[in-house]
Length: 190
Image 1: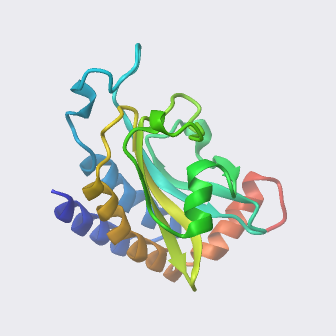
Image 2 (image 1 turned 60 degrees about the vertical axis):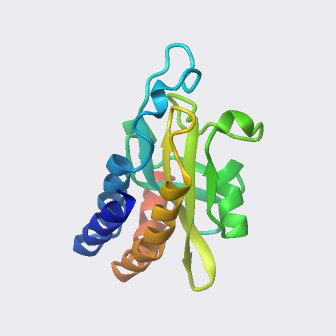
């Protein structure tokens, strides 16, 4: 049940000690609770040689507002720990620009969908903007390889969680942490 997942994710975010742990702990709950667990069994939901798996995390807008950086990821390849994508790239860019949530039940129906995950194209995704001081500071994402996995109730769950995550992130120094981490990962002065 998504309301139980949201309650668990909120508790995890509030118990976190660092900005990244706020995202990691709360999104690990979403990763393990959201989505239709039988969607991959529907004929055509997965392509040949595909298998169902999930990813979750957040993308935060980097200093200078040119990119978004992956933070607190679950299920992404380890070498994409600090994945950087263009600020206006694909659907994450649309969520940032419009500061509105987005559900993609089947990414194959969206020709403009961009694959950022190195290992596979995701078939279904939900995004919720992280709004602070009236602007999108980033977004939450949960995605699955099988089309039809993410539903309206999954979107509602991360939309409900988003204000808690961004508030707890900021309370633990998230913006400064991001500035430093971005500097380290990109060889830039913090």
